[in-house]
Length: 402
Ligand code: NAD
Ligand code: MG
Image (cartoon, rainbow, N blue to C red; front, side, top):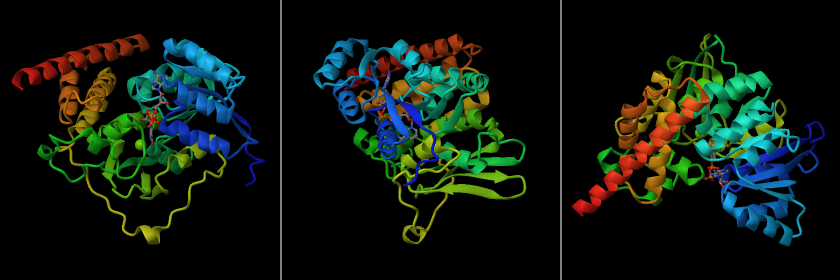
């Protein structure tokens, strides 16, 4: 494959041990002359991070958990690697903003990714943005910081990457009538709300089309993922709620659609493999080999589309209304959802408690101040505190009645 026209990139992969991180590293390894992983960062899994350092030989490795620093440093030395060890989010932000990288794959899960996303945006890096929660929490700020520094954001979420490809940029402008995000419908598509009462964690994370981390898999099962993506799209493409729509498409081959004022609709299609979106991020405006096969529509057969069921999946309705409310509502929605999903994954609450908790958190805190990063982080903290209390009351209530 001829990559001579692809500019050289020094890439920081944040969330390197995760699903997106491993797709990004696969892609980087396919273009050894041009792409280098220079910074690898992960949450707390030192062994997995060191294994990646053995294969990719980065200059720096960062573990979020400060308590793991010595273990990381010693393991890198034992492996005979020259990779420098770092720990904590301040160290990560400094590396992201510094000379070690020109390109950042932001693939940490949750609001924990906001700080490094902002660091990359502020330092004018090419920002391959997978961490949708940072846009839901503080999207206006992330976009403003990127615009001020000249950072180029390429959306990596497959739907937003599809829209980016259809537009050729992040500018929707007045010629776009509507952006339609497609949704697979998740593992529970077609089920009634009542039948979801007893679903298990294993059923919820078994996504029919995509292989992803546990949090986004649960978000896909509740349809909160599509709700977060509506808010993400509003920021990335500067469009209001009235120009956004959701269409369920179970085959997950049409990744999203853009309708223009002349009646044309452009869509991006491809196999459900995140390496396509990541290769757009690394190569844009060029196309580079991603290792993903082309689409054989004859073999795949019929493409189906249906409206989302907001009764069975109230998280999507809650996200629509948080987008309409604006202010702190999206931050509260995101924080309550992260806390609820974590409790669900730990077996503490049931599946239907996720929307119930998010709805109560929004009712309690959606009107918190939202005029600055500090205010948004305070709203995030309030919503997490509220949600922990809600979960505690629910679990102790269950214990009493058992
Ligand atoms: P994952 O759970 O597989 O990986 C998460 C990564 O984040 C891990 O490397 C983990 O170590 C790291 N991490 C967690 N907490 C951290 C912290 N405090 N500091 C530093 N690192 C931390 O998740 P994923 O599926 O790869 O998703 C990552 C992000 O990309 C999410 O925001 C998700 O919504 C988004 N996304 C993922 C997909 C997908 O196909 N997996 C698609 C679209 C968007
Ligand atoms: Mg998506």
